Image (tube, rainbow, N blue to C red; front, side, top):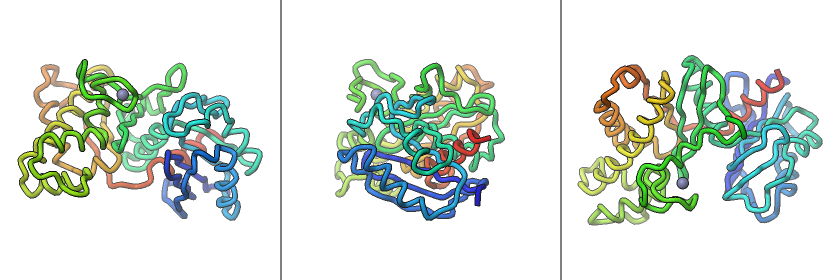
Length: 299
Ligand SMILES: [Zn+2]
């Protein structure tokens, strides 16, 4: 079926591969280890072998890092060392014989959430992917905003505190250093009397729901930092909606209540009164979004 597309979301450890229909529903999906040290050509061969049994009209790839939209190669990658410069677009197109679109993974996930969870209706949306890292994507006037060099939307690296905690990007005080998994676990160690074992954001959320004062403080801090970063962006972009994706968004009101509190305290009321805060149920948004973007590109 030519109206199906393949989405491939390549993370540093695992890659998710799915067959997606025009509504964004997953028809097939599976996960393989990325094996980054074996290089991009090895990965391409394995991924191509998997999808060869499917029928589809285009392929979308979401890659963690800066992507050159024209050549579909990686410009900068923190987790896939040695993968820069490889033309994913040309190489996959040659193997599979269909158009291939390459996108930053957070942009792809935000596009998936925008098209499916928000039905593509709002015109302007700020999207965040909350996981180990904090990724971002911007939809402006119904289109994914890539910027001059394809690196727009790095919301996770907005500086919230000069000299704050160290971020994985090497700078200090970024949103990610507070709201990324490692930021949440650092705060849990600082605030909780009895640190859960194993220590995960889910365990910290469970402790908070059970009334643990330290855990409640952790989520208050995470939500407040998210609210601060989003407030600045809302003043700039005046969006219809904010889309929160990824595992951490599952903490629900623990993280959303402090965000709403920060919004309610803003002196410029109008843009905050109208904005919709959406945290849809978890799905492989990166796979869905990459596949849907590849459809748009093929026209
Ligand atoms: Zn950073």
